[in-house]
Image 1 (cartoon, helix red, strand yellow):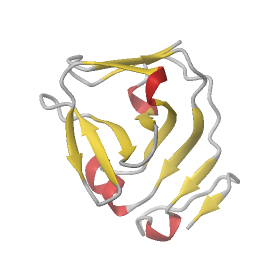
Image 2: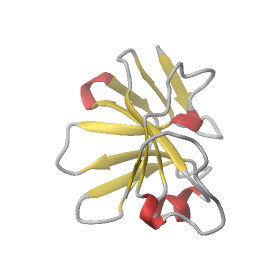
Image 3: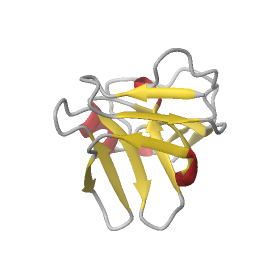
Length: 123
C-alpha cells in the first residue's frame, strides 16, 4: 500500500493498487504550480482513497489539479474524461518502489536544466 499526504497533513491519500506510468512532467503548468518538474503516477479513481478537503482547480478544458487549501501542496492531476487520477510521487510517505518510465511535455521544459537520464522523452 502506498500512502501520502500534503505538507501540513490535512489531506491524505492511499492506494493498494499498483500505480501506473511513473513520469516527470515538464509542462509550463506543472512548472508554475510545483516550482519545477512534477513527478507522478496514476491509479483508477476507484483505487484511490483521498481524505480531506482537496481544492480542485480546472486548469484547462481537459484537466484539473488538486491541492491542499491550507498548505498549497500540489497533490493530484485529473483529466475530465478519464477514470484515473495522478498523484504526486513527492507526497508519498516513504519509498514508492516505482521506476520512472517517461518524461512528458519535454518540448515545454525550462531552459535552466537538461534531462540527463536515458528515460524516454515525449514532446
